[in-house]
Length: 108
Image (tube, rainbow, N blue to C red):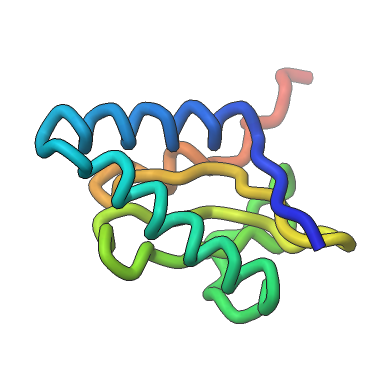
């Protein structure tokens, strides 16, 4: 099993860690530990989290789960044959519907 990350997810994690560390010493490390623990659980049971609704053709089977301690952040991921692909890690105040909106149809 493996856990892979999109470039957007890496950016999200780095940005959140830096912000939380600036807010309180050690906050970034605690955030990463909380995320690591959740990802280990999701890697073992990738179908356990809720499906993201509405479905998105760019991210079929997209699922999400809020972090246990830093519950105002959620992991958006897809189960893949050998584990999970973390697509984004977003603060729950973000407009997730817009972030994961399907691409508009190109003009005819």
